[in-house]
Length: 162
Image 1 (cartoon, rainbow, N blue to C red):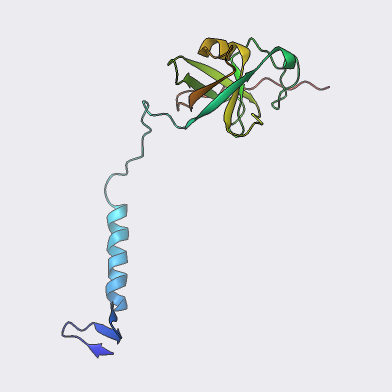
Image 2: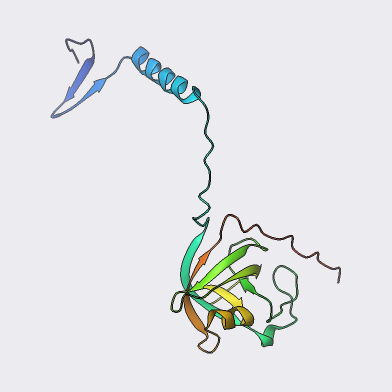
């Protein structure tokens, strides 16, 4: 180990060298950073209303009359005429904007079920939503999902005792 002219210690190991800073200098630097972070007026991060909080792209499919009246994962009965959807992870009651990337049509749906259970798909929407998006006859479509910050989920319906 060697002391340089500025008082720092320099350790040599072959061609690699590192400078060791005295601990009182490091402590002073940390103290200054903490003081700078605590001073002044604190600004809270504000969400950008034009930017969605969640975005996902992929293939959507639809399900309809064959499942009418059956209980969804949220406990409510499935209605193919309602604007609802199944998503694997979004909270029940979340309002999601679904946009068909082929034609630009979009619709808001409420997540009330889990699925789809087919690899590569991101959403199963109701027959009504598929019709509005323009892919009911085709069966599937490339879509973009976004969950706007201002789309607060409604209160889910109360479950009835069986």
